[in-house]
Image 1 (tube, rainbow, N blue to C red):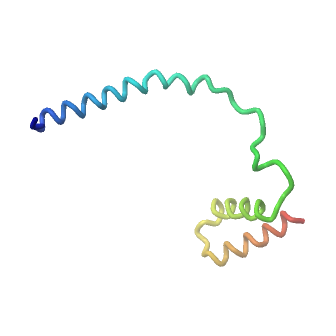
Image 2 (cartoon, rainbow, N blue to C red; image 1 turned 120 degrees about the horizontal axis):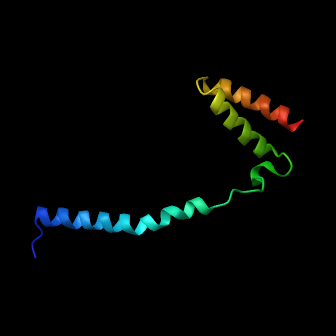
Image 3 (cartoon, rainbow, N blue to C red; image 1 turned 45 degrees about the vertical axis):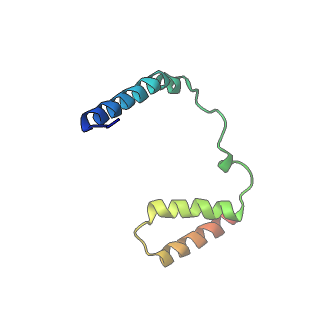
Length: 85
């Protein structure tokens, strides 16, 4: 059996339509999700050095992304010291 370009396009179009038809009923599932009432796990518990480092690096990436890496590392180290006090 030889597949021509027309048959191949028709097959791909049918597969896309079938995939769309199968996912369409699932679109309503996301609206029924209730929001979380618990706090995230990352914010609970005691402050550890690794958690402080992670939070400080994330804050530095947002606020000082244009600074060079050495300058950001100094900012992160100072932030970690402040958080661990």
